Length: 426
Image (cartoon, rainbow, N blue to C red; front, side):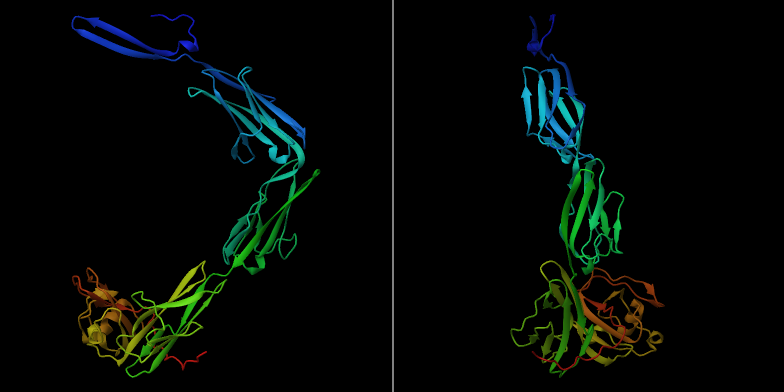
């Protein structure tokens, strides 16, 4: 079969069928007749004064007829679709883009794209508008943490070219020492602090006028939390002990307490007394059940910070053969004491590294882990799968398999803690 002078209307699916006494075979052939897609814009270059109306016409050809779209490409390469202000004529095979009251922000490349699903062609027109500057990207108003580094942008498009001047909250047009003015007109504020808080103004000026934009920078202080003392010895018979937690931030954080297992500490039941200034009083101290790691958390709705202290049963002088289990085997409990100075020569069993079995001797384990001095504090945590054998600080530990409890040396046990002072209520 031969088709003469093929046209788009000849596009269809043809079926070829062959048949004999043994059967029938069919084959389908799809024919698509196309014409090359073209796109051409006019005028390709335009220079107009601000406030002018501009028409850019895109002429196209193609079979099947293409769909025509427009986009605006600004300096820097950002492309945005243009849908408003366009008209389409199938009779004249044209699409017209109408730019009304052109200003600086209407400058740039305009792309006409014709596509029929088989072919795509693009043609570009460049429009330059002479007017007062336009600002593509204004400084972003934001709230930041003190100490951060931020960049404020002021991206300008202008013909004639414009100069950019920043005005700062406290120094006028003179950049503060911690502000860098970048070659692209943006500014970098390093290690931001309260002095940098305020309104930043970017002014772009050429011979046809000035355009000004502003951005507000708010600086807030990060939340910090500290606990005094960082480790607290208790003894049987203590009527109370006190821990103080303080927090700073903008806004000020709310302070809460939790025990080592994550349970919140509350004033209900009479065991604990929470003070309004972040203080925590433990009454009728039980050297076993009241010891452990206490966490103070500060939260101001934007940030959270924590600090920890360990309340431990002070055993006083330890022997070279004291094991972790001699004080407590209950998970969450904490103990501490003072080691003699000659325990390395005494020998003893040490199982693990950093985490030790409860049958390990305390003083050798502390030296093995790297604790300096003779004071050692530990707490009982959930057991590990294995306890490794390792030579460290001249001491060889041994291997052990899984156990339910682990003794963990408190890293802050570099020296004896001082008892808490008498509480001041109110």
